[in-house]
Length: 261
Image (cartoon, rainbow, N blue to C red; front, side, top):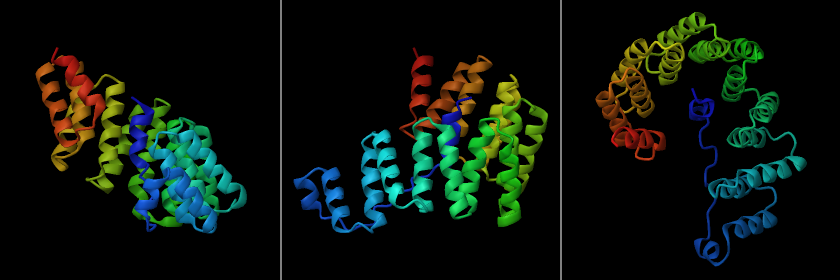
């Protein structure tokens, strides 16, 4: 199971273009130059800094976005939002160690459930048992509304260390807390897949796509399961549904192309 593919679903787009933009001026110069000029004019504007970072991110230059965020942090060390942004960017740069450091700093400056979840999930995937302490603290501070995440993250950790029965029970507990929590279905299904229990995984994914019939990841993993049991027709149908829901689902397109040759 691809670590990046699954965990990226928890990292939302964190930038909002809230500033009033002079489109004519942007057209007359590069976006990078425009945002830098605006920051020089209004150095205390956090939104302008976000826009510059987002500009680099949108252009695919994640490293430059990280460097820029770090530069801003040098003069604003206790800005939890900047640390959160850096955590997302570090993850996108495939640096999960630094990502966990950044999310931890964001959380320590401004304790909140979102950064706790991000931090704990990354630690869990990396088989770091400290994720369990983060989970306990999350429930203690933010209450039982996050029990579905509490069980999910613990399940991810036990799955990562190959204690699969414990993990499956925890995923079931997460689903019981919220039957519409699609992450729990995916985690349960992929854990079953890792132990070659493809029929059981199909049952889980079929339920997930019934609960949420536009669940692209659910159909994609159904396709993978059907491939494993040599049911190519069912796999093709699942991949087609994935693409119908999300036309940009590259992995589904590649799988469909391979099967239809």
